[in-house]
Length: 362
Image: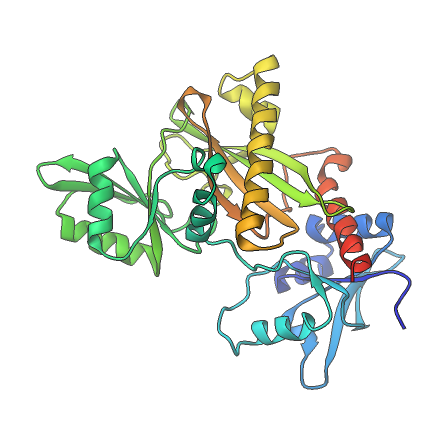
């Protein structure tokens, strides 16, 4: 017999559960609980270790009326959100759990990850998004790097499935057959490398498949670069909505802008003002960023399949041109630079509304 309201399960990292048990406030969990209560869905969280495939049981974590978190056996979810990165190995527990849950559950996002090459390929298919993406190639051999260095002032080598701006190489041509190299993770910088030495550094740093991409001329102030995170979510009608936007301000001289590299996060109006975009100009820029984000998520879904939530990294370049840098199927919703409860809960409300929509559509 079908329940009166949907059961939603969110797969989280074990560290999230440990933090809540220590009494720490974990926005991803606390705000989701409040949103689920508001929308009228039954919500629990679980880890891979909470799933017993042999006995076909699942345990979940819920917040009781006293605000305490407790673990108990739960029904298999009607709607699921995989908020963690799963191993891609076919017979790994993560993939086996995913297959079991997907027998009956609809997914907020059917894709675990949006790789940089997949995103570029998808957006390059459509004329209206081609102007927003930098030239990018999937690295096959050294000739890919060599040809990109002939065309662009600087090139970035990015892991295909990297995160947090880790293990990115910045390379540039110094002339006379010599090259420079810089690592985003450590800040290590080398100059006057031969091309074969450069290739060796890039391959070692990437730790797997990677793309080579032109380095964009990003708008800077005092050698600080910008990045804008736009979270797009589907609502209770299955339509894309703008959930949140905020800015990252990088450290002086750093080419990668990420909180993992110590970038400052600010509400979008404050972030834009740092770069001299204020007043009516800031309003128009914010609206332009959302328009580009809306177009981007629609094209990504058209090319890659249904999704319910996407975090986009955009950047403002010279001449205030908007660029699409990458997309994330599991955007971070912890540690957001907002103090207003109505603002930070918005992406969680949309997620729960969309979960209700998926349940009703079954």
